[in-house]
Length: 383
Image (tube, rainbow, N blue to C red; front, side, top):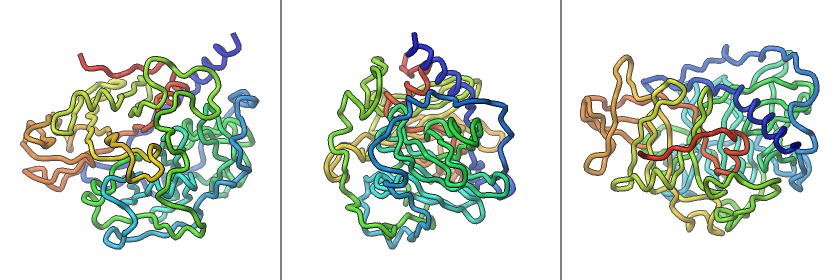
């Protein structure tokens, strides 16, 4: 009964988090402004939102996995340490596009960053394969910055803010213990794409450098073989049996919650490409999948890892014009104009060339963790 109550509590919390509308407009320019970064509404909640006993030590002390507080960036042409198929976390805010190589993030997990005046925290939990970005709010005159607490909740990274020492599970973006109890962070669209696909979409973007101020073996995978585990690290209970524990899924949550399994997207693919149109919570989404992105959590060296592909969700419209996408002759094209589109949501050929789709809030995750935070999630299956 206790386990059921805990699951119900998590379901209520997750259901309360309506993922925010994407930050990118139809022309690819962010609508997020400095003035949008405001103090969240006060919370009337008393007492922790989760059982503190379920927040367990992952081993390292606070900031034992050191966040990057002064990130250094390179122009794409100056990057020599990535191979084309390596995964990067793609974030675009305030018209600035940045790539955060997972070979770096898996050693640091948190980057406290700024996008031309908009404070953002970019996070990656290697135990869950979740790359998530949030706006960093100013509360009581203090801009929050985040560190790694050394704790886990459902095997998920628990962040803490250095201003109040409140605990924030990454997957929720919600303060569950501490002075900021009940405060929520605003999600910013983040996608896991291959380095080559991101670079082609953003030749003028910025790439996180390995000059982090720390000595780490960037490119090696300290979690070798984790891709195939059926017992996730420090995960209590049994993973949801509907999919393998470490199945890659793209999850969308809100008034409706659904997971798109990579295995299903790959099964439906033609020439390494898939497009799915699906109403989620009354809003039509287009989910793109493309082969050619390797896992960061498979082989001892990331470039040698298995190809799992990349998936992203978009609003299939430009202005007031609805678009329908199909895979045709090795390309994603829209049926209305015949323009060709990339996995990054950019039209590269045809009448729509130069336009970009609005990115929807969707989270890459291992299945076990998505299901733990969203136990009532549906699973996409083709008819």
